[in-house]
Length: 293
Figure 1 (cartoon, rainbow, N blue to C red):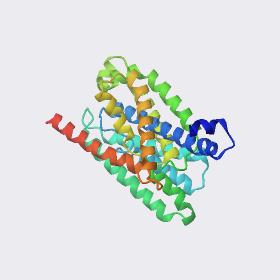
Figure 2 (figure 1 turned 180 degrees about the vertical axis):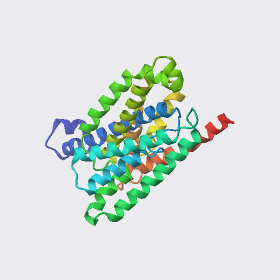
Figure 3 (figure 1 turned 45 degrees about the vertical axis):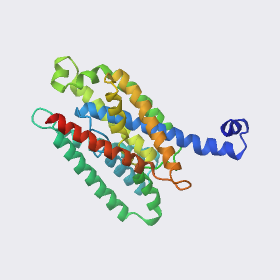
Figure 4 (figure 1 turned 180 degrees about the horizontal axis):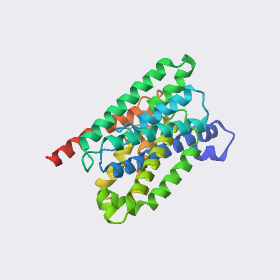
């Protein structure tokens, strides 16, 4: 009833809260979660590992470092997003090149590469914070907490999500074949190098847009695709649209909890997703070890 009344009386305080605070934050939470979900799904195909995730593999850290570097230089929004995209792309390239064993992906090397990259980006971010002026500290810390308190309407994020989603859905048949390995995909007539490059760019773009909107939020890209695969959604023609909806919904629910658990104080939503994602990551790691045994 309060929402309905706010829509009927646009000049009221409730209407201002609805249109200027709640709507932008809700939209930003959904779009950010959707971007992280689709980035996780694409990286899991690229690396053929269900544990792949922008946060775990250090891609979010690279995007955060790029964004913080642009903030420190006083760059505008376009340069900020470009710098975040460059950081995410560099991380993706490093993981892709270093995690490859002899003839196939090595899960242990993949995880170690991601952990080392994340630690390295964390050290670089700490260095930036130590060198940054005090007046810029608060704005830079925003990217590290994974917080939606200052979120605005995600115009660029929505446009980027639509572009990534359309291209990913178009690539779905090739993604289904790529999940079986590059040699298998090449034998089935898939242009492996072209598809791999597109996955690179799409995953990095989605991660960079998510980071520039809400900071460094982890584990949504791990949890959403894996839950859908456990539910039987393995065809990417179904998985891609579903992971957009589930990723957005998960982050939206996490943001609602972050605002209400210790109200009137608020938790950074990145803290809440980590508290949920870390146990699930450990469970998946333990499960994969048992399957290997």
